[in-house]
Image (cartoon, rainbow, N blue to C red; front, top):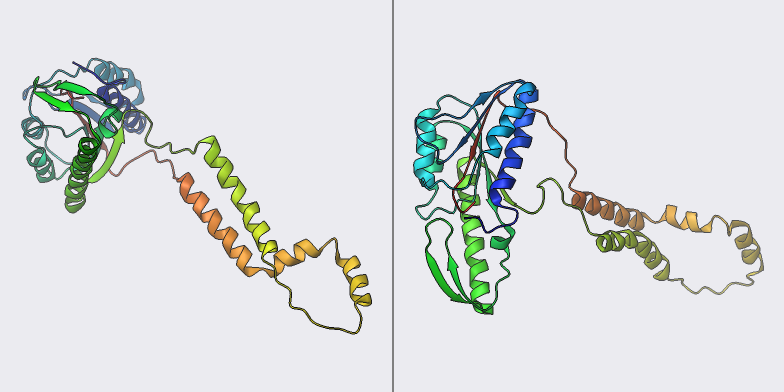
Length: 288
């Protein structure tokens, strides 16, 4: 049973296909397995770009119908696979038996672990109203609720605690943690059109405020005649002279440039991780 649109499993497949392609183009070994597959059955081990179609075929065939617990599934995976390598685990971690034991098992195998904690937009920000009877897609467990402001507030507190616990668990044990959801790619963080417009208006506003706040000290002189004539000669260049003399204005514009750069989140594209063996472990439970 799948109630999300698009399903989390579909997003997990896209992540595995994209990262798997990187490994295949570098002639690294790529292995794809699911948490719930039988202990004696291994996933395909692929190498070379020409095997990308096999990777995609295998991923397309995955369905969210496995019932093995997270901890038992990871234990089975560790029994099937030995040796070092990069394990990219894609899961929502929503197993009622917990996930800590399974992650500890991966750590004990000395894998280089990347955890993509995948959640749906409905889980991160539920848009529910009224009196509801929620049915769990995995075990048909029922929760009868009445949506209210206090309940939604408590839900978000529970959600933040759940995510924070997973992030802290990974940080303490040297795992790379990434929270993702099934609506937007991870590497894209673009601003909307009105945010770009607001950002573009800030530099002119800083310059305008610089001129508006200019204060002149009154000084009595015998005559302003020569001063007026001198100003006429420098009138064209007076704006740029003011800007050149203002160190404070320069610093303000530099800080703004750094803020814009931080919002854009620049990054370098890499084609290879730190090992020559990629293992994708995908959670295919019904909650995905």
